[in-house]
Amino acid sequence: MKFRPWLVLWLLLAPVLSAQSTSPSLVLEGTVTSAQNKTYVEVPFQVPAGVHRLSVDFSYTGHEQHTAIDLGVAGPDGFRGASGGNKSHFTISETDATPSYLPGKIPSGSWKLLLSVPNIRVGVVSHYRAEIRFNPPAEDSSFASEPLAHGSRWYRGDLHMHTAHSDGSCMSQAGKRVPCPVFVTVQAAASRNLDFIAISDHNTVSQFDAMRELQPYFDKVLLIPAREITTFWGHFNVFGTTQFIDYRAVSHDGLDINAILRDVRSKGAIASINHADAPSGEICMGCGWTPSTPGDMSLFTGVEVINGGGMMLSSEDLWDREIAAGHRLTAVGGSDNHNALTPADQLGAIGRPTTVVEADELSVPAILNGIRRGRVFIDLTSSHDKLLDMEAGVGSRHAQMGEDLTASDGMSVQLNVHVAGCTGDQVHLLVDGHESPELAPLEISGSDETLHAHWMASSGRHWLRAEIRDSHGTLLVLGNPIYINFQTR
Image (tube, rainbow, N blue to C red; front, side):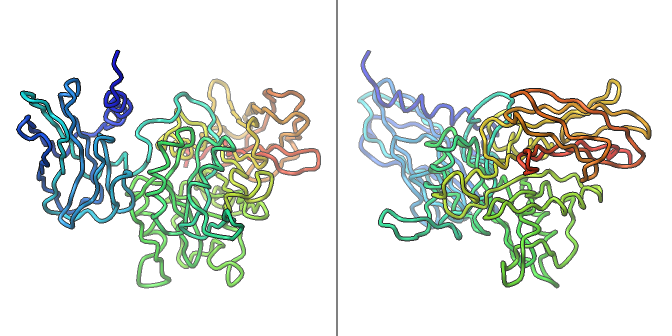
């Protein structure tokens, strides 16, 4: 069989086309004939106001006869890119674009596809079809056109890091400290076998263009769009959207944190408070959580309970206070890495700590859904095998970590704690954020086992969670709660 490079390319790009689940906003169809061989064809189309991203899927007939039609696009503001025959799909937005294309504002008005015809044989007629989508939500939330892995399991990642697009730096080849490229960060994550990372540069969105370029190459590491919203009264990460979010909170007569959070939620993204107990003021401007107006905690999904930046900072106290107030916030961790070349065994290294999320697949929607559900534990040791999960049951009713269980006063609640990779350590069970004398630590003797305990329920709202500590009491793994009677009020 004769080798046909165009066929190989078509097969490689086919999954991109099949990944487009939304109906096109506009379809352009036409024909190219042999009379147009070695000419340029412009196909005009109109873009309405209010578009922040457009995506194009292009196909044509005649490949078996060696017809070749190359692709490009121009807007009212001029040339926006050309990919020749190497791409049948591209996306352009205010923040990022498929390589070969330029990101930037999407002005309304007359656009045109730029078709080049390097070859079409005499007598051949090629039919082309361009599907154009305005503001496709899937490409606003992810750089991957399909899941990187399938199947429900625990996926390991890091939700907080910085690159050259804010204050991340590393040593250059000549030994000078320079802004650290996004590639170095992703390469470090890949070398540590992480399943996902969220590059969360401060307030900016410029890192997304590099992430869209890198995602096809790093097809074992899911790149989650994120940024650290940095205000004068606290920082929080936003996950799951590439769209601009105005971060300029003020103390009065203007945008406050709640308004920012409502904007985050309207874009389908989630938010998590960062290093709430960090020092603030001139020591670290805006680092501690001290909002000038009361924050609506129902607009948050999580809290960065463990921050690896230099000292493994814990914010368990704020987390417990907010749960006590009725807010079901998922504990996550983040390295807060500012130097991608930090050795893996040092504080602040990428993946230290590791946030481990149970998800149906390795995709942005699935990972975010796992965080929303509370199916998360934090591995402070950055291992590849530690596991912590918990189940509670009353009679035939059961709840997993992150879920709610109803238990009346005096009921015996069966607790089953699944652990792995922690032989010789102990499980500590916490009630309402504190260890209880009625729940003694459980010794871990096997490499993978389920330990059992009973807790006598009392009236009111409670939350139960597990931690794994070593023989010296050092925290190794932190789990999320099972909520007792949270749905009864």
